Length: 286
Length: 139
Image (tube, rainbow over all chains, first blue to last red; front, side, top):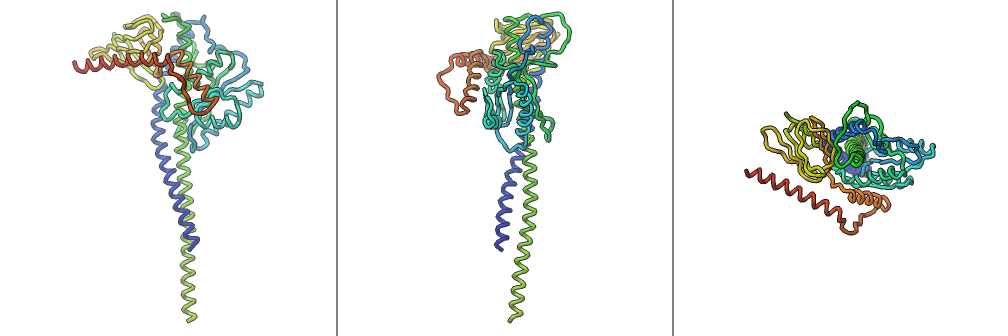
């Protein structure tokens, strides 16, 4: 019966683990829903901002903001958005792997790299692999405020203004759906693509105080809102990935318990049979 | 004749709808915007945005600064939710750097004067909004 007892304790411990993982799965599911709502709520701001910037780009062609101009790349900066906590499957590692590939390309071109990390996991990873981390923001929680990101973004933007960085990227996970998160790397500065769409207008704003200051402030807020969106989206990804990972863990635990239960039943049966045959043999001897 | 008003912050949409007139705390004094106002772009101080709507009571929305964009039929307020001042931004950038350098506990030195001042301005404006709300509630 010794074997059976061992198996029973094992089953119990796995059952406990299963309880924890399925609880985590449910927590992640409800958090994910909230994170998705938050993700949607951030969209109007960036949309409006893009509209204003594209108005500006047309209305005011003589002032060229540095963020709109390309220049030869000697140093690049990455703002890396990761989760603070683990147990979310391959979410962070997939992103880091994608990043390392991207970084290698820049290395081959002789560009130096600086990091700004958001989230504990990225901090730990890049501390381990070595790399110049110039700013960090960790423990941003489930409901991040934009104020926790202003500083880190500013370090990078200052780097661009001072000419220390020539290009800034944002690396984060894109929320495709609950099951799928796509690691993506987007160029933040110089601003490309849709932000400077062409619609021909012949008017200009009344500026208060003056156009340059306003454009500068707008650009900074625009970049911040993009990073913030990345962070919020990454949070939704984190919860999604955790939900899936915990579901897989619960399923695996269930399978394991089934197998052990079978082994336990067999051991029990064998013990009973043995006992019986011993009794029968004893009776026959008398 | 109405003008469409959108108030959004980086974190959420705050207000969206038509209005007869909007009064906003621009950097150089309050501005009132009626439909067909000329295009304008300005910064906002911490304060309240007053939205005059047809038939209904005025709405007051508190913003802690931001940007105001005016198009002839659309007013957009890009509100800041965080306190913004050059010194504060600078300080938070320094803090981010410091954290990265040490990746350890934050030790804040002395009281940040600029931050205190900005916080005071915000608190005063918030109080004003609250008082007005209470008054209208009673009436």
